[in-house]
Image 1 (spheres, rainbow, N blue to C red):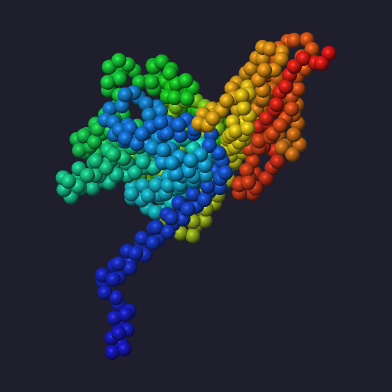
Image 2: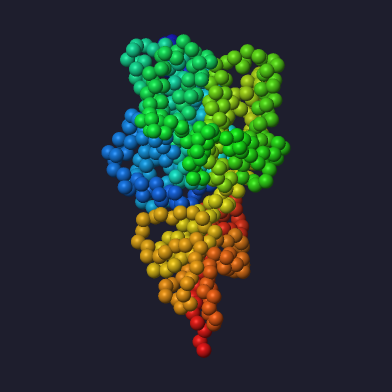
Length: 551
């Protein structure tokens, strides 16, 4: 009996054995993916901790407050848009309505949400690479490449930039398309449901951010080059998606889209521009140094400056090796799909607006997503039969190099834009709550502040005082960048003088008195452990009094 029992226990039934194997395989896949998400979330959360709402964030909150739930849903499901709609982002309005309802004006909830989006893009890359059949190692490497790069952090620093949510939806939509295109439907109902899901994800994606309007172009080019026999299969879905993108009625009166090369520039500096090579080259190779990665500002605001030198050269050498040794590799439809995705994203850069590098760095996310897959795949394919130990060691070294280079860029953004965000919001909130009926001159903070709060002050970028006796209080908020433990007021006051014109009256006495300093530094782990410097951006609030000297 004992021997029979031992035999039974040592040889489980086939069903049990198969179930156990399946569970182990799932754990082997799920645990690394979960760790990737968690690591990316913690990294982003450290970078954005204790930041404040900023500039356009308040505009989106206001729009969300003014828009009813039914109206938001109607805009999401609108079959034909009224215009090309650079700012028509009902999904973003919906998210702001939910976030403001949950957290009010507390920025912590908003930034936690952005950190979650950042981590989910990294996970989404790993998942879609696996969906493409590239394997877990390629997926994890692609996700890590994105998570360690600076553009995602540039997007996370600004709450109102929803590119990462759009990328999550783009990844999901393209993943569904890939499954449909590479499987035989079990039934017409199954086919219809999957096609409907593809359409729904694509529509929600482009009603989050304009970059998702590229989905039909990516799919059409791929089908034409690799699967022409399936063009008719996807024609209804692509037509429906295109109908929700192209303003057909608007085209009757204005047939030229704003991004056409020959269109009139209506960008106002921040919307789609007529397509031009200058903007595209700037976002592909701007401030690139072939050895150091970045030339000029430390902030990498182009695709190549983000992946150079740690990843660009290994990827190019890998592709050259594959071209010589494995020519059939380049006929792979998966490679073709990723290259088409990347190429269409790069071409779209031609119509992006040109902004200061700190704001433009977030645009790199659009092309970095497919580029991460291409880089990971090429390096993995060229590595061939390396042992697991050698592969892990080599990739760890490569990713560490990539992380160090990009952390310089992330620090550059956090130490400049991040500090300005905090200093500006702290100062404006204090002024609004504590100063009444004053003329307030804003110097150096060229950003909006449309928070809905009772405010009797009048704000100016430049001010000319016309009377020699003061009738209203006068204050000035001046941006500075210096050691906050040893403030020197000479430079800020000089900036103030250039923006303020006083009456040219004999005997006029003007006094400028600093009353409060609003530091861009916080009590966050990042500022305490990584920044560790007393020099920072800050806002200095001055009180200005003037009048005739006593005789």
